[in-house]
Length: 597
Ligand SMILES: OC[C@H]1O[C@H](O[C@H]2O[C@H](CO)[C@@H](O)[C@H](O)[C@H]2O)[C@H](O)[C@@H](O)[C@@H]1O
Image (tube, rainbow, N blue to C red; front, side, top):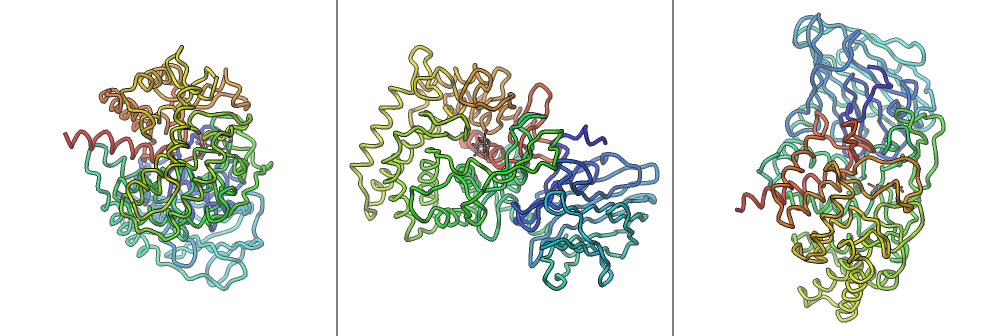
């Protein structure tokens, strides 16, 4: 397949909950950051060419695989090729990490005798550094600065170096297996401990299946729900509980455009919503780990609360460009870091206080300082909620009074009041928070609602609309049968989802977003539309939309951030937690309600 013809949905995800790789339909690992999600990539062909690093294994002269699938309820990927000489399977996975990250690729003959080729082109630091390769202890070792990567095979396969790449060619007959293991290691340390690839496969399959079996959802589309949950789990950085918004940077929101951002960080917004999705599906351990991550990350002066952090709670995520990478389908610039880290986004306070409330109600163990953190956040929010902010879409066109931000400030006050009412042992400024809650509500209804259009608006005084307004009934700001809610759902749907898929806002006639080019439809917003339709009593339409959205997933059930209905292509970072948590939340709300009668 020509690189220029690649699509985002050509990729499948594998990972070890500390980092992740993207494997193409042609058998090429085109993205891998080592040792963490947010480390520099040693395979960056995703955002450039093979010269930026990749690892290809496939039958000689073959193109895309004939079929591929995850082994049921796992993150182990099987790609199979039928060739004139026979059939072969390639199994890709990253074992649960012990000491060092491993990427395992097992080639298995299924029928006939097939010649398979491998090309390993390591390029450290996002495709810019060609390592030195040498042989040691029967393995190939690549070293450049702090990084070293070891390649070995079982049984040993002859490899040779050419054009700054390591090549191999071998045949497999029915029942024969050849395993390759790539292990990253700090270059100053002695040789890493080596895993047995076949044992690692068995244990990875068993571990994922045990985990998936804990999902309490048994309704329709269970496979899609479980795939989404596995994806959310794979995006969780196990050592700290931090959750990345996506494992990639700079997959474009518009093909060939500049809307390319780095998502390998933990957003409070995306993560709190992930926590709620995991809790709803019965996963308390992950939710607890993230809640504890949150309490560590936000420790300190609430005025310094950030909208996103590094995986261990790091605060500095400076944004810069990688000019040597041409970008996916020429979508430049490629960015690392994220400038939105310095923005004021008021919604985050509501999401955090709400998620702590949900966690408490779900029975997660209470931490002694949890309530103190909430009180501090509330005191700070009381001083800033009247300020304009950048909003949940992190717009770069200046601050305004976004209605969604104010609604979420109301959520923070509402949940804080509820906590005091429900838990007499807690201490807080009940009257003050009640006053704030009522003041925000009054102001939003006066300044954020346009009676002429019978809809809430994107920001105070604007006529523009925004998909985030669909959350108004979901968070309880107004009841679903309020005529203003019904008017808003209808107006937002008519204006921003003419083809059924939701845009976040109008990128063309709206100066809120100064970036050039339109973007695709935003998948989590389309799930919000389904939720809103369900809430206002249009369950059939909600179910129909849900089915369409599930149909947008690629062949292995993965969703990017956005979708272009005109070209039927996924867009943006991939796979994205936001989209998958939307799928889980909507499925559970839609179908569990059905089952309950
Ligand atoms: O559209 C401009 C902004 O796009 C990104 O933000 C989006 O992704 C975040 C992570 O999933 C999500 O929390 C946010 O709501 C989305 O708008 C990007 O990270 C920003 O830097 C950029 O300004």
